Amino acid sequence: MPKKTPIFPGPHTARGAVLAVLLSNEDQLGAEPLRGRITLAAIVRALKRKYHWPIDTESFPSNSADGRATWATVYSLPPEVIERALKAGGRDWLKSRKSSVVCAEE
Image (cartoon, rainbow, N blue to C red; front, side, top):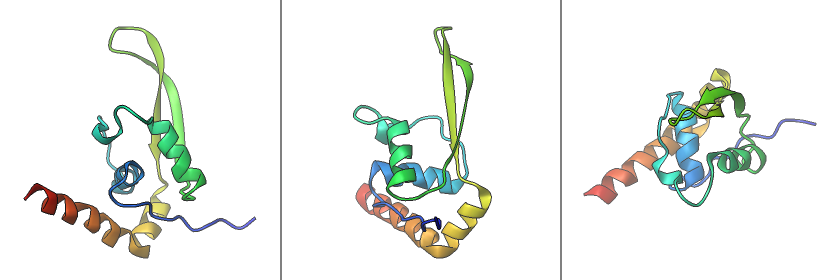
């Protein structure tokens, strides 16, 4: 079965916020827009299934702030996927996210 071309979600959605972090290939310690109603795992699942992004997932044992044992998960996109996405309109998509944030703050 051929691979489907990834689709960019709305730039001002929680899915868009997560994809922007993945495309930046930078770490994110907090997820302000995600607190409350939806989990990061649910957004990643939607980006994989509905939007066809080949997101890599790595889980490992960790400790919570209060010392309990738990699992941590890291999500990433392969470098070649990031490069293709940026060439296929991703740079403009990222700019559209930033430009409207600046407009909204003014």
